[in-house]
Image (tube, rainbow, N blue to C red):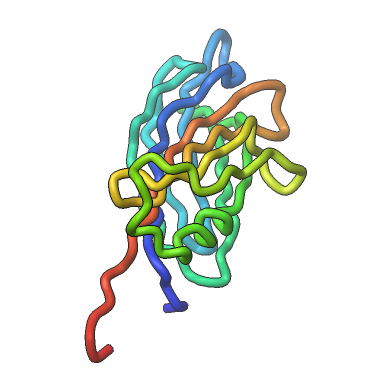
Length: 165
């Protein structure tokens, strides 16, 4: 096992304006990949604006791999259709975590990540000290597709150090 530095709790909130891959709509689900970890949300039936509100947890090691999001339309008899993908780095979040912010006032915006060619952010993504955790709200614009956004909330969880190990 590589050097795990912490856990990333990812709350997959919702999708917006996803493309229809079936006659009138889609049955979307998301696959989140980071390094060799692969997690999947449930399938939302007949919905191009799905609400997942599902928590996924990734263990984070350095060097940090980018997080890849793939959206698919679940099909019964044929291969699932691609509905777009996105990618982003949690390095800015990790940089903030390393600042040891315990004394920060709740709700302080530590840093904002701006959309760039290196990420799929749809807008500014604030990294906030909230209730004792470093959190980041992320809206990703899907690539390789006509439309669609995925909304996520990230929360960093430190792994307690075990004495003597």
